[in-house]
Amino acid sequence: MAAPMSWRRLVHSMYTPAIAGVFTRISDRLFRARDRRGGSSVLLLAPLLAEADPAPRHVSRPAGSAGAQGTDGLCTHFRWMAEHVPAFRVPGAHIHILSSPDQFYQTMKARIKTAKRRVVMASLYLGTGQLEQELVDCMEEALQRSHNNSHTPDLKVSVLLDYTRGSRGQINSRTMLLPLLQRFTSQMRVSLYHTPDLRGLLRLLVPQRFNETIGVQHIKVYLFDDSIIISGANLSDSYFTNRQDRYVLLENCSEVADFFSDLVEAVGDVSLQLQPDDSVTMLEGMVHPYRGNRQDFSVAARDRIMEVMNTAHVRQGLVNSSEDSEDEGEEDTWVFPLVQMKPLGIQVDEQVTQRLLTDAGPDSTVFLTSGYFNLTRAYMRLVLGAGASYRILTASPEVNGFFGAKGVAGAIPAAYIHIAKQFYNQVCRLGQQERIHLHEYHRSQWTFHAKGLWYYLQGQDRPCLTLIGSPNFGYRSVHRDLEAQIAIVTDNEELQSQLQEEQERLYQRSEEVSDSTFERPDRHVKLWVKLVTPLIKNFF
Image (cartoon, rainbow, N blue to C red; front, side, top):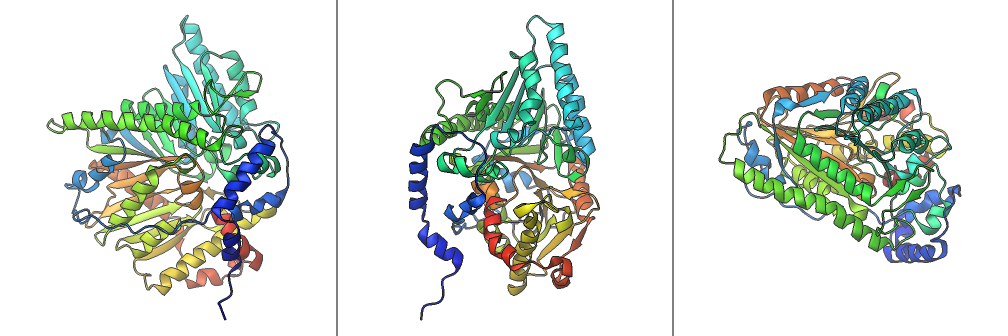
Protein backbone atom coordinates (compact mmCIF):
# COMPACT_ATOMS: atom_id res chain seq x y z
CA MET A 1 0.00 0.00 0.00
CA ALA A 2 1.23 3.52 -0.80
CA ALA A 3 2.45 5.60 2.09
CA PRO A 4 -0.18 8.02 3.45
CA MET A 5 0.01 11.49 1.93
CA SER A 6 0.61 14.35 4.40
CA TRP A 7 -2.07 17.04 4.61
CA ARG A 8 0.32 19.70 3.31
CA ARG A 9 1.40 17.56 0.35
CA LEU A 10 -2.25 16.83 -0.41
CA VAL A 11 -3.12 20.52 -0.40
CA HIS A 12 -0.24 21.38 -2.73
CA SER A 13 -1.20 18.52 -5.04
CA MET A 14 -4.60 20.15 -5.49
CA TYR A 15 -3.65 23.85 -5.42
CA THR A 16 -0.97 24.04 -8.07
CA PRO A 17 0.57 27.33 -9.21
CA ALA A 18 -1.55 27.12 -12.35
CA ILE A 19 -4.78 26.95 -10.34
CA ALA A 20 -3.58 29.79 -8.14
CA GLY A 21 -2.95 31.81 -11.28
CA VAL A 22 -6.44 31.12 -12.60
CA PHE A 23 -7.86 32.14 -9.21
CA THR A 24 -5.99 35.45 -9.41
CA ARG A 25 -7.07 36.19 -12.98
CA ILE A 26 -10.72 35.46 -12.23
CA SER A 27 -10.70 37.61 -9.12
CA ASP A 28 -8.94 40.42 -11.05
CA ARG A 29 -11.79 40.59 -13.52
CA LEU A 30 -14.55 40.34 -10.95
CA PHE A 31 -13.20 42.73 -8.37
CA ARG A 32 -10.76 45.07 -10.11
CA ALA A 33 -12.80 48.13 -9.30
CA ARG A 34 -13.65 47.06 -5.77
CA ASP A 35 -11.75 48.49 -2.84
CA ARG A 36 -13.31 47.54 0.45
CA ARG A 37 -11.99 47.04 3.92
CA GLY A 38 -12.91 44.31 6.40
CA GLY A 39 -13.38 40.69 5.42
CA SER A 40 -13.30 37.14 6.64
CA SER A 41 -10.57 35.30 8.50
CA VAL A 42 -11.03 32.42 6.05
CA LEU A 43 -8.24 34.07 4.05
CA LEU A 44 -5.79 33.05 6.75
CA LEU A 45 -5.72 29.82 4.74
CA ALA A 46 -4.30 31.74 1.78
CA PRO A 47 -0.81 30.28 2.33
CA LEU A 48 -2.17 26.96 1.13
CA LEU A 49 -2.49 28.50 -2.32
CA ALA A 50 1.13 29.65 -2.32
CA GLU A 51 3.93 27.66 -3.87
CA ALA A 52 6.14 25.85 -1.42
CA ASP A 53 9.68 27.13 -1.07
CA PRO A 54 11.42 25.39 -3.99
CA ALA A 55 14.25 23.02 -3.28
CA PRO A 56 17.47 24.99 -3.70
CA ARG A 57 19.69 24.25 -6.63
CA HIS A 58 23.17 23.08 -5.71
CA VAL A 59 25.68 25.91 -5.61
CA SER A 60 29.22 24.74 -6.08
CA ARG A 61 32.00 26.54 -4.26
CA PRO A 62 34.29 28.28 -6.76
CA ALA A 63 37.91 27.25 -6.53
CA GLY A 64 39.90 29.55 -4.33
CA SER A 65 36.87 31.44 -3.07
CA ALA A 66 37.40 30.42 0.53
CA GLY A 67 40.36 30.05 2.79
CA ALA A 68 41.84 33.53 2.95
CA GLN A 69 43.70 34.14 6.18
CA GLY A 70 43.49 37.42 8.05
CA THR A 71 42.33 40.72 6.61
CA ASP A 72 45.03 41.19 3.98
CA GLY A 73 43.04 39.12 1.52
CA LEU A 74 39.65 40.70 2.18
CA CYS A 75 39.51 42.57 -1.09
CA THR A 76 40.11 39.35 -3.03
CA HIS A 77 38.02 37.22 -0.69
CA PHE A 78 34.77 39.20 -1.06
CA ARG A 79 35.35 41.20 -4.25
CA TRP A 80 33.02 38.82 -6.10
CA MET A 81 30.11 40.79 -4.63
CA ALA A 82 30.98 43.63 -6.99
CA GLU A 83 30.00 41.34 -9.87
CA HIS A 84 26.39 41.42 -8.61
CA VAL A 85 25.88 44.85 -7.03
CA PRO A 86 27.42 48.32 -6.86
CA ALA A 87 30.55 48.49 -4.70
CA PHE A 88 31.16 51.67 -2.68
CA ARG A 89 34.55 52.29 -1.09
CA VAL A 90 34.29 54.47 2.03
CA PRO A 91 36.41 55.36 5.05
CA GLY A 92 35.72 52.93 7.88
CA ALA A 93 36.02 55.85 10.31
CA HIS A 94 32.78 57.22 8.85
CA ILE A 95 30.77 54.15 9.90
CA HIS A 96 29.34 53.96 13.42
CA ILE A 97 27.40 51.12 15.02
CA LEU A 98 24.49 52.38 17.14
CA SER A 99 23.72 50.20 20.13
CA SER A 100 20.30 51.08 21.52
CA PRO A 101 16.79 52.09 20.46
CA ASP A 102 17.17 55.44 22.21
CA GLN A 103 20.46 56.19 20.43
CA PHE A 104 18.77 55.32 17.13
CA TYR A 105 15.85 57.65 17.92
CA GLN A 106 17.92 60.56 19.20
CA THR A 107 20.29 60.32 16.22
CA MET A 108 17.37 60.52 13.79
CA LYS A 109 15.85 63.53 15.54
CA ALA A 110 19.15 65.40 15.59
CA ARG A 111 19.91 64.63 11.94
CA ILE A 112 16.44 65.63 10.74
CA LYS A 113 16.68 68.98 12.53
CA THR A 114 20.00 69.86 10.88
CA ALA A 115 19.23 68.49 7.37
CA LYS A 116 19.56 71.10 4.63
CA ARG A 117 18.89 69.30 1.34
CA ARG A 118 17.03 66.05 1.89
CA VAL A 119 15.41 63.76 4.41
CA VAL A 120 14.46 60.32 3.08
CA MET A 121 12.65 57.86 5.33
CA ALA A 122 11.68 54.33 4.23
CA SER A 123 9.92 52.08 6.73
CA LEU A 124 7.09 49.60 7.06
CA TYR A 125 5.02 52.18 8.92
CA LEU A 126 5.09 55.27 11.15
CA GLY A 127 3.52 54.82 14.57
CA THR A 128 0.93 57.18 16.06
CA GLY A 129 2.25 57.83 19.60
CA GLN A 130 3.98 60.77 21.24
CA LEU A 131 7.51 59.72 20.25
CA GLU A 132 6.49 59.38 16.62
CA GLN A 133 4.79 62.80 16.76
CA GLU A 134 8.05 64.31 18.02
CA LEU A 135 9.78 62.82 14.98
CA VAL A 136 7.17 64.43 12.71
CA ASP A 137 7.64 67.71 14.61
CA CYS A 138 11.37 67.56 13.79
CA MET A 139 10.49 67.26 10.10
CA GLU A 140 8.13 70.22 10.42
CA GLU A 141 10.80 72.30 12.14
CA ALA A 142 13.34 71.53 9.40
CA LEU A 143 10.84 72.23 6.60
CA GLN A 144 9.76 75.49 8.21
CA ARG A 145 13.36 76.63 8.65
CA SER A 146 14.11 75.88 5.00
CA HIS A 147 10.93 77.65 3.95
CA ASN A 148 11.79 80.77 5.95
CA ASN A 149 15.37 80.99 4.72
CA SER A 150 14.71 80.90 1.00
CA HIS A 151 12.19 81.90 -1.64
CA THR A 152 12.85 78.46 -3.16
CA PRO A 153 13.25 76.06 -0.20
CA ASP A 154 16.04 73.55 -0.69
CA LEU A 155 14.94 70.87 1.78
CA LYS A 156 12.89 68.01 0.38
CA VAL A 157 11.33 65.31 2.58
CA SER A 158 10.38 61.94 1.08
CA VAL A 159 8.67 59.22 3.11
CA LEU A 160 8.09 55.69 1.77
CA LEU A 161 5.79 53.38 3.75
CA ASP A 162 3.72 50.28 3.13
CA TYR A 163 0.15 51.03 2.04
CA THR A 164 -1.60 48.31 4.04
CA ARG A 165 0.25 48.84 7.32
CA GLY A 166 0.33 52.61 6.93
CA SER A 167 -3.44 52.80 6.32
CA ARG A 168 -4.58 50.57 9.20
CA GLY A 169 -7.08 52.15 11.59
CA GLN A 170 -8.65 55.61 11.64
CA ILE A 171 -5.49 57.16 13.11
CA ASN A 172 -2.53 55.84 11.14
CA SER A 173 0.71 56.71 9.39
CA ARG A 174 -1.16 58.70 6.74
CA THR A 175 -2.99 60.90 9.23
CA MET A 176 0.30 61.53 11.06
CA LEU A 177 1.89 62.92 7.89
CA LEU A 178 -1.08 64.70 6.30
CA PRO A 179 -0.52 68.02 8.14
CA LEU A 180 3.01 68.23 6.72
CA LEU A 181 1.83 67.30 3.24
CA GLN A 182 -0.90 69.93 3.37
CA ARG A 183 1.40 72.66 4.65
CA PHE A 184 4.56 71.90 2.61
CA THR A 185 3.08 70.35 -0.54
CA SER A 186 5.98 71.33 -2.80
CA GLN A 187 8.61 70.01 -0.40
CA MET A 188 6.95 66.83 0.86
CA ARG A 189 6.31 63.46 -0.76
CA VAL A 190 4.60 60.47 0.86
CA SER A 191 4.61 57.23 -1.15
CA LEU A 192 2.64 54.14 -0.12
CA TYR A 193 3.83 50.90 -1.73
CA HIS A 194 1.09 48.35 -2.42
CA THR A 195 2.07 44.77 -3.23
CA PRO A 196 0.69 43.50 -6.56
CA ASP A 197 -0.17 40.20 -4.87
CA LEU A 198 -3.00 41.69 -2.77
CA ARG A 199 -5.70 42.15 -5.38
CA GLY A 200 -9.14 41.05 -6.49
CA LEU A 201 -10.99 38.60 -4.27
CA LEU A 202 -8.05 38.34 -1.89
CA ARG A 203 -8.02 42.10 -1.28
CA LEU A 204 -11.79 42.14 -0.77
CA LEU A 205 -11.92 39.37 1.83
CA VAL A 206 -8.68 39.37 3.80
CA PRO A 207 -9.12 41.16 7.15
CA GLN A 208 -7.31 44.47 7.53
CA ARG A 209 -5.35 43.09 10.47
CA PHE A 210 -3.82 40.39 8.27
CA ASN A 211 -3.59 41.95 4.81
CA GLU A 212 0.06 42.82 5.34
CA THR A 213 0.87 39.09 5.44
CA ILE A 214 0.49 38.98 1.64
CA GLY A 215 3.50 41.25 1.12
CA VAL A 216 4.82 44.64 2.23
CA GLN A 217 7.39 47.36 1.73
CA HIS A 218 9.89 46.31 4.43
CA ILE A 219 12.98 48.43 3.62
CA LYS A 220 14.30 50.46 6.59
CA VAL A 221 16.46 53.37 5.37
CA TYR A 222 16.77 56.76 7.10
CA LEU A 223 18.76 59.35 5.18
CA PHE A 224 19.78 62.91 6.08
CA ASP A 225 21.73 64.84 3.43
CA ASP A 226 24.83 62.64 2.88
CA SER A 227 24.46 60.48 5.99
CA ILE A 228 22.30 57.39 6.29
CA ILE A 229 21.10 54.86 8.86
CA ILE A 230 20.52 51.31 7.65
CA SER A 231 18.49 49.25 10.09
CA GLY A 232 15.78 46.68 10.64
CA ALA A 233 13.85 49.05 12.93
CA ASN A 234 10.53 50.67 12.10
CA LEU A 235 9.40 54.19 13.01
CA SER A 236 7.42 53.19 16.07
CA ASP A 237 7.70 53.85 19.81
CA SER A 238 8.81 50.35 20.82
CA TYR A 239 11.69 50.57 18.32
CA PHE A 240 12.72 53.80 20.10
CA THR A 241 12.53 52.38 23.63
CA ASN A 242 12.62 48.62 24.34
CA ARG A 243 12.69 46.67 21.07
CA GLN A 244 16.27 45.62 20.32
CA ASP A 245 17.36 45.90 16.71
CA ARG A 246 20.55 46.73 14.80
CA TYR A 247 21.49 50.13 13.37
CA VAL A 248 24.49 51.40 11.43
CA LEU A 249 25.18 55.06 10.65
CA LEU A 250 27.20 55.89 7.55
CA GLU A 251 28.29 59.49 7.99
CA ASN A 252 29.22 61.71 5.04
CA CYS A 253 29.08 58.83 2.57
CA SER A 254 27.53 60.75 -0.32
CA GLU A 255 27.67 58.01 -2.96
CA VAL A 256 25.96 55.46 -0.71
CA ALA A 257 23.38 58.07 0.33
CA ASP A 258 22.73 58.98 -3.31
CA PHE A 259 22.19 55.33 -4.18
CA PHE A 260 19.64 54.72 -1.43
CA SER A 261 17.92 58.03 -2.16
CA ASP A 262 17.55 56.94 -5.78
CA LEU A 263 16.36 53.47 -4.70
CA VAL A 264 13.66 54.87 -2.40
CA GLU A 265 12.63 57.32 -5.13
CA ALA A 266 12.29 54.46 -7.61
CA VAL A 267 10.11 52.40 -5.25
CA GLY A 268 8.15 55.57 -4.55
CA ASP A 269 7.56 56.11 -8.26
CA VAL A 270 5.77 52.75 -8.53
CA SER A 271 3.78 53.37 -5.34
CA LEU A 272 0.55 55.17 -4.55
CA GLN A 273 1.07 58.88 -3.89
CA LEU A 274 -0.65 60.33 -0.81
CA GLN A 275 -2.52 63.56 -1.59
CA PRO A 276 -3.34 66.44 0.83
CA ASP A 277 -6.98 65.29 0.98
CA ASP A 278 -5.89 61.75 2.06
CA SER A 279 -6.68 60.26 -1.35
CA VAL A 280 -4.05 58.30 -3.28
CA THR A 281 -3.08 58.39 -6.93
CA MET A 282 -0.49 56.79 -9.19
CA LEU A 283 2.06 58.78 -11.16
CA GLU A 284 0.94 59.37 -14.72
CA GLY A 285 1.71 56.41 -16.98
CA MET A 286 2.41 53.96 -14.13
CA VAL A 287 0.48 50.70 -13.92
CA HIS A 288 -1.78 50.45 -10.87
CA PRO A 289 -0.54 47.76 -8.43
CA TYR A 290 -3.88 46.04 -7.78
CA ARG A 291 -6.26 47.39 -10.43
CA GLY A 292 -3.89 47.04 -13.35
CA ASN A 293 -2.43 43.90 -14.87
CA ARG A 294 -0.15 42.22 -12.34
CA GLN A 295 2.53 41.24 -14.84
CA ASP A 296 2.59 44.71 -16.41
CA PHE A 297 3.02 46.31 -12.98
CA SER A 298 5.83 43.97 -11.97
CA VAL A 299 7.73 44.50 -15.23
CA ALA A 300 7.41 48.28 -15.02
CA ALA A 301 8.41 48.32 -11.34
CA ARG A 302 11.34 46.00 -11.93
CA ASP A 303 12.62 48.10 -14.83
CA ARG A 304 12.40 51.31 -12.78
CA ILE A 305 14.23 49.83 -9.76
CA MET A 306 16.84 47.94 -11.75
CA GLU A 307 17.61 51.14 -13.63
CA VAL A 308 18.92 52.48 -10.31
CA MET A 309 20.86 49.29 -9.56
CA ASN A 310 22.40 49.00 -13.01
CA THR A 311 23.33 52.67 -13.30
CA ALA A 312 25.10 52.59 -9.95
CA HIS A 313 26.75 49.27 -10.80
CA VAL A 314 28.28 50.65 -13.99
CA ARG A 315 29.26 53.97 -12.41
CA GLN A 316 30.94 52.39 -9.41
CA GLY A 317 32.72 49.88 -11.60
CA LEU A 318 34.31 52.75 -13.49
CA VAL A 319 35.11 54.67 -10.30
CA ASN A 320 36.69 51.66 -8.63
CA SER A 321 38.73 50.79 -11.72
CA SER A 322 40.20 54.28 -11.82
CA GLU A 323 40.99 54.14 -8.09
CA ASP A 324 42.61 50.70 -8.08
CA SER A 325 45.97 52.13 -9.06
CA GLU A 326 45.71 55.06 -6.65
CA ASP A 327 46.41 55.30 -2.95
CA GLU A 328 43.30 54.12 -1.14
CA GLY A 329 44.10 56.30 1.87
CA GLU A 330 41.40 55.99 4.50
CA GLU A 331 38.93 54.23 2.20
CA ASP A 332 39.49 50.86 3.84
CA THR A 333 35.88 49.64 3.77
CA TRP A 334 33.53 48.36 1.09
CA VAL A 335 29.74 48.76 1.18
CA PHE A 336 27.60 46.52 -1.04
CA PRO A 337 23.83 47.26 -1.20
CA LEU A 338 21.72 44.10 -1.47
CA VAL A 339 18.11 44.32 -2.65
CA GLN A 340 15.46 41.58 -2.59
CA MET A 341 12.06 42.15 -4.26
CA LYS A 342 10.97 38.78 -5.55
CA PRO A 343 7.36 39.83 -6.32
CA LEU A 344 8.99 42.16 -8.87
CA GLY A 345 11.53 39.58 -10.07
CA ILE A 346 14.53 41.02 -8.18
CA GLN A 347 16.52 38.56 -6.05
CA VAL A 348 20.00 40.03 -5.70
CA ASP A 349 20.16 39.69 -1.90
CA GLU A 350 19.14 36.04 -2.08
CA GLN A 351 21.86 35.27 -4.63
CA VAL A 352 24.59 37.04 -2.68
CA THR A 353 23.52 35.53 0.66
CA GLN A 354 23.50 32.03 -0.80
CA ARG A 355 26.98 32.54 -2.23
CA LEU A 356 28.22 33.92 1.10
CA LEU A 357 26.85 30.91 3.00
CA THR A 358 28.22 28.55 0.35
CA ASP A 359 31.72 30.02 0.64
CA ALA A 360 31.73 29.90 4.44
CA GLY A 361 34.21 27.06 4.88
CA PRO A 362 35.90 25.46 7.90
CA ASP A 363 38.16 28.52 8.16
CA SER A 364 35.31 30.81 9.21
CA THR A 365 32.74 31.40 11.94
CA VAL A 366 29.34 32.96 11.28
CA PHE A 367 27.18 34.59 13.94
CA LEU A 368 23.67 34.84 12.46
CA THR A 369 20.68 36.46 14.13
CA SER A 370 16.99 36.82 13.34
CA GLY A 371 14.11 37.94 15.51
CA TYR A 372 11.98 35.40 13.65
CA PHE A 373 14.15 32.33 13.08
CA ASN A 374 12.65 30.78 9.98
CA LEU A 375 15.40 30.01 7.47
CA THR A 376 14.32 29.20 3.95
CA ARG A 377 15.01 25.65 2.89
CA ALA A 378 17.83 26.90 0.67
CA TYR A 379 19.54 28.78 3.51
CA MET A 380 18.97 25.94 5.97
CA ARG A 381 20.48 23.42 3.59
CA LEU A 382 23.56 25.60 3.18
CA VAL A 383 23.99 26.10 6.93
CA LEU A 384 23.61 22.38 7.64
CA GLY A 385 25.89 21.38 4.79
CA ALA A 386 28.61 24.02 5.09
CA GLY A 387 31.91 23.70 6.90
CA ALA A 388 31.75 26.97 8.85
CA SER A 389 30.91 27.15 12.53
CA TYR A 390 27.56 28.80 13.20
CA ARG A 391 26.15 30.47 16.28
CA ILE A 392 22.54 31.39 15.60
CA LEU A 393 20.67 33.85 17.82
CA THR A 394 16.90 34.06 17.87
CA ALA A 395 14.19 35.41 20.16
CA SER A 396 13.05 33.46 23.20
CA PRO A 397 9.24 33.24 23.32
CA GLU A 398 9.01 36.03 25.90
CA VAL A 399 10.84 38.56 23.69
CA ASN A 400 9.02 37.59 20.49
CA GLY A 401 7.08 40.59 19.20
CA PHE A 402 3.87 38.54 19.09
CA PHE A 403 4.11 37.31 22.70
CA GLY A 404 0.77 37.88 24.43
CA ALA A 405 -1.04 38.85 21.21
CA LYS A 406 -4.72 38.07 20.83
CA GLY A 407 -6.21 35.47 18.50
CA VAL A 408 -4.19 33.53 15.97
CA ALA A 409 -1.23 35.91 16.30
CA GLY A 410 -0.82 34.77 19.91
CA ALA A 411 0.22 31.33 18.65
CA ILE A 412 3.18 32.71 16.68
CA PRO A 413 5.77 32.48 19.52
CA ALA A 414 4.81 28.83 20.09
CA ALA A 415 5.13 28.18 16.36
CA TYR A 416 8.67 29.55 16.45
CA ILE A 417 9.44 27.23 19.37
CA HIS A 418 8.34 24.37 17.12
CA ILE A 419 10.48 25.66 14.22
CA ALA A 420 13.52 26.00 16.49
CA LYS A 421 13.02 22.50 17.89
CA GLN A 422 12.76 21.03 14.39
CA PHE A 423 16.01 22.76 13.42
CA TYR A 424 17.77 21.71 16.64
CA ASN A 425 16.66 18.09 16.17
CA GLN A 426 17.98 18.13 12.62
CA VAL A 427 21.33 19.46 13.81
CA CYS A 428 21.48 16.64 16.35
CA ARG A 429 20.49 13.95 13.82
CA LEU A 430 23.31 15.09 11.56
CA GLY A 431 25.80 15.12 14.44
CA GLN A 432 26.53 18.83 13.92
CA GLN A 433 26.18 19.97 17.55
CA GLU A 434 29.84 20.97 17.78
CA ARG A 435 29.60 23.15 14.66
CA ILE A 436 26.10 24.66 14.90
CA HIS A 437 24.86 26.25 18.14
CA LEU A 438 21.42 27.79 18.68
CA HIS A 439 20.96 30.62 21.20
CA GLU A 440 17.89 32.40 22.59
CA TYR A 441 17.84 36.11 23.48
CA HIS A 442 16.39 36.97 26.91
CA ARG A 443 15.67 40.42 28.30
CA SER A 444 12.90 41.33 30.71
CA GLN A 445 10.31 43.80 29.36
CA TRP A 446 12.03 43.94 25.96
CA THR A 447 11.38 42.41 22.55
CA PHE A 448 13.99 41.25 20.04
CA HIS A 449 14.03 42.24 16.36
CA ALA A 450 17.74 42.13 15.40
CA LYS A 451 18.77 40.44 12.18
CA GLY A 452 21.91 39.99 10.12
CA LEU A 453 25.24 38.24 10.48
CA TRP A 454 28.87 38.74 11.46
CA TYR A 455 31.57 36.84 9.55
CA TYR A 456 34.89 35.90 11.21
CA LEU A 457 37.80 34.47 9.25
CA GLN A 458 40.07 31.86 10.83
CA GLY A 459 42.47 33.22 13.41
CA GLN A 460 40.68 36.56 13.66
CA ASP A 461 39.01 37.74 16.87
CA ARG A 462 37.04 40.47 15.09
CA PRO A 463 34.53 40.17 12.22
CA CYS A 464 35.57 41.43 8.80
CA LEU A 465 32.07 41.39 7.27
CA THR A 466 28.54 42.05 8.43
CA LEU A 467 25.10 41.98 6.82
CA ILE A 468 22.71 44.54 8.29
CA GLY A 469 19.28 45.72 7.18
CA SER A 470 15.70 44.53 6.92
CA PRO A 471 15.81 40.84 5.77
CA ASN A 472 15.09 38.05 8.27
CA PHE A 473 16.49 35.14 6.17
CA GLY A 474 12.95 33.68 6.13
CA TYR A 475 10.32 32.87 3.53
CA ARG A 476 8.66 36.28 3.68
CA SER A 477 11.92 38.17 3.28
CA VAL A 478 12.92 36.11 0.26
CA HIS A 479 9.56 35.66 -1.47
CA ARG A 480 6.97 38.25 -0.38
CA ASP A 481 8.39 41.58 0.77
CA LEU A 482 10.60 44.38 -0.51
CA GLU A 483 13.90 44.18 1.42
CA ALA A 484 17.28 45.89 1.48
CA GLN A 485 20.43 45.48 3.50
CA ILE A 486 24.12 46.21 3.08
CA ALA A 487 27.19 44.04 3.28
CA ILE A 488 30.05 45.89 4.97
CA VAL A 489 33.53 44.47 4.37
CA THR A 490 36.26 46.25 6.30
CA ASP A 491 39.98 46.27 7.13
CA ASN A 492 39.41 49.07 9.63
CA GLU A 493 40.29 47.75 13.08
CA GLU A 494 38.14 50.27 14.94
CA LEU A 495 35.08 49.36 12.86
CA GLN A 496 35.82 45.67 13.29
CA SER A 497 35.94 46.25 17.04
CA GLN A 498 32.59 48.03 16.93
CA LEU A 499 31.08 45.07 15.09
CA GLN A 500 32.61 42.63 17.55
CA GLU A 501 31.24 44.60 20.51
CA GLU A 502 27.80 44.72 18.90
CA GLN A 503 27.78 40.97 18.34
CA GLU A 504 29.03 40.17 21.84
CA ARG A 505 26.57 42.59 23.43
CA LEU A 506 23.63 40.78 21.85
CA TYR A 507 24.90 37.27 22.53
CA GLN A 508 25.71 38.09 26.16
CA ARG A 509 21.98 38.28 26.81
CA SER A 510 21.39 34.83 25.37
CA GLU A 511 21.32 31.24 26.57
CA GLU A 512 22.39 28.31 24.44
CA VAL A 513 19.61 25.89 23.48
CA SER A 514 19.93 22.28 24.63
CA ASP A 515 17.70 19.22 24.92
CA SER A 516 16.42 20.45 28.28
CA THR A 517 15.24 23.74 26.73
CA PHE A 518 12.39 22.02 24.91
CA GLU A 519 11.49 19.84 27.90
CA ARG A 520 10.41 22.83 29.98
CA PRO A 521 6.63 23.17 30.53
CA ASP A 522 6.57 26.66 28.99
CA ARG A 523 7.99 25.21 25.75
CA HIS A 524 5.12 22.78 25.21
CA VAL A 525 3.56 23.37 21.77
CA LYS A 526 -0.06 22.39 21.23
CA LEU A 527 -0.95 20.10 18.35
CA TRP A 528 -3.02 22.70 16.50
CA VAL A 529 -0.09 25.14 16.60
CA LYS A 530 2.17 22.48 15.08
CA LEU A 531 -0.40 21.97 12.32
CA VAL A 532 -0.57 25.67 11.41
CA THR A 533 3.18 26.24 11.70
CA PRO A 534 3.72 25.75 7.93
CA LEU A 535 1.27 28.61 7.37
CA ILE A 536 3.04 30.85 9.88
CA LYS A 537 6.42 30.08 8.28
CA ASN A 538 5.16 31.44 4.96
CA PHE A 539 3.31 34.50 6.21
CA PHE A 540 4.87 35.76 9.48
